[in-house]
Image 1 (cartoon, rainbow, N blue to C red):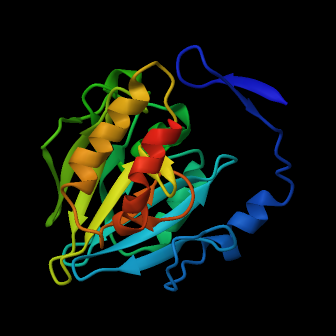
Image 2 (tube, rainbow, N blue to C red):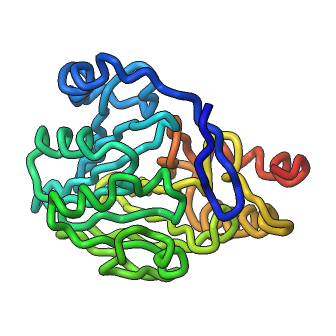
Length: 253
């Protein structure tokens, strides 16, 4: 078992991964995009959800099962890549399978597992990069676009509302995209909100800050139908998680 560095001063232990046969696997069935979208990639390759104005392709990469999202405008083909994590070859391979052109690469927050492929993917695509202003100095690529709370990120004809959530990191940003036909909001939360709770916090007071932000900026703003796309693991909805808010506060994580 090896030790690498995560957030400042926090060691993260990673078990060795046997990569024999990995390249062959990744260039075959695991790059096949299925339109049977469940949000659970534990036993599948990339999955695609189709909205009236866009498609969302979800990819899981690396030993920490990081989620990468590629959002493609239905009208223009312009693409937003959310969290170029861990595996540039897989991300480029999926991009090659899609019709469209990467226009922006957005990083939800500063933690290394969410940007390991950022430099490679940015160089390969030529797409400008975006991130929250506060977390930006910790990234390996200086963002071309700095986002603050309430800003709007435009990619082709798609608009994403930027939501600053403090706690998991000082400068985490979630993005919200609305499907105009259904009215359903699609919320990309990084590591700030997962099925079953908010993201991990370290410093005293950060948990309360994060829960407060998640409650006021997400749960009080958006309806139960809102789909949550986290930085790791399965999707959820605000309606599924809303009844547990008091439980999260009581348990403290």
